[in-house]
Image (cartoon, rainbow, N blue to C red; front, side, top):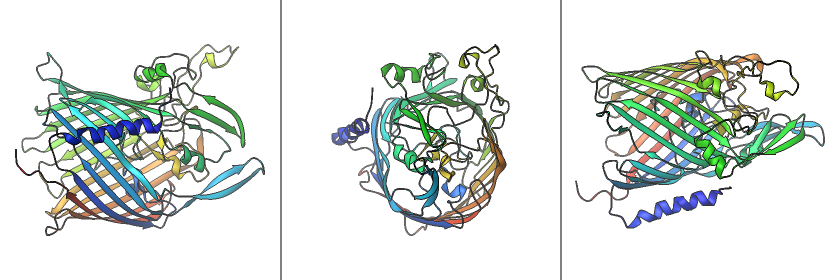
Length: 513
């Protein structure tokens, strides 16, 4: 069962055109922006490029972006939305290593992001509490403060959006017979990776592997206690899978073998309800995800305090929390109204346990006399058969783990996922027209779950951002960012970026409700 991109975009076109005759709802919004940035390093600064939909990665970037879209109205029984987001610009190139088996030599070749691309193209429909969306739509964390966090471990908004069809509850809904004390929210979707050419262009063709024509599956199930209470807790799991496609394995520049993974109807069902079927060693596809929990306490004056964690898993050992203290741990403060400090987070990240350094199963070795099974070396975001958990080279999960796009040796995997670090984020308003955001942190990585690096990677980064919205020009925003990075994860750099953006409305509602 092969779903081509035209099938997905066919559904998208129908979603965009079908509601055209419906009664007018909310207005159609549009925005135009122009950004220019540069720095002293080989890549863009860490915080300037992180959690921005894969827009920026190069040392120099000049981009113009235009968006037209409509949000669904949650207070209506039926509603629809859509979005079209186009980017055009120029980015500086980065040289990557490549091996030639015919000449047995290495060479360097430049690569840069596309000058013109579709960033978002989607349509969505809501009926009562259910929704269906189709296309490429940017999504951030469903649990964390996307403005201040270091990034969700599963779906952070760091990479370009993967085109997909997704359905589920539009928001949390009361579970029957609980009198509103317990609510549920969940969604699931299937997508297709369209970045095969990126992996082909950046791969060194010497070691490891790349997989083409793969699919994506996302699913989430959260439970929440009554949010109107002073104390409320949200808990649940996110899970994703990469499946299908054809993997090509290289060793010392020689293509040793290829393997085609199943993608029939039964495989699509297995992604929703995975079980040990013997496929691809144990389970069909590459599965990973996180256990998530977020607790909120509201003070008398309306201020809110949050405590949260997100535990990663790559297999059964991680699901059983045999990976020690690995995870994202955070505290958050949120003011009741705009203030000098309207929000703040502090987070600790640890991914060094990975269920231990060994992974051994007697079934993998015919004739072995060792009967014990040791499940470890989780090697977060990497897999022996599928591409690493990245899209166009940028981590789909947390950007704190250095993405494959930064491996100028052409190695297509996360080389520093055995990592520790901390992160802070603060935001507030200086005046009605001027706001700021400060992000900073330190990270150190010793290698992966299988291979330690000769020397650890590290980075200290601090970014200050300011937003000015002049009162006399409604819709205009001037955004400036400056950042200082010191370390090799990926590089030393001093960077800056300036963005001018205008938000407008095409057809304001001619009447009030």
